[in-house]
Picture (cartoon, rainbow, N blue to C red):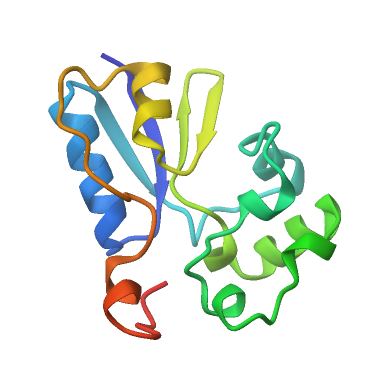
Length: 140
């Protein structure tokens, strides 16, 4: 069992599903509000590890979906500045177990990281289900 610091957007359907999955696997989930956390650029950057800058972003965020931000043109510093200004842009969840960090919820990667036991895979735990049902749900 791991204790997971889980940075989420409160009310996010997928974050709720992700936390339930982690708890069902026997992990202790300590939820924190990603949107109100006092992020510092260096601290936020540590969650992204070797991911490409474009993979740091929440693909369901309105500014991303509407093409207002050109992800392939951003430097790391520009990306972090945008995320600090608008935390809805941050891909979620951000998770921490001890000194180990992860962003996003790829179920296989999470299983390899901390274990999910023999829990059935749930498809697409990152895309906003409301956004899939509507062009823009306003819940990103």
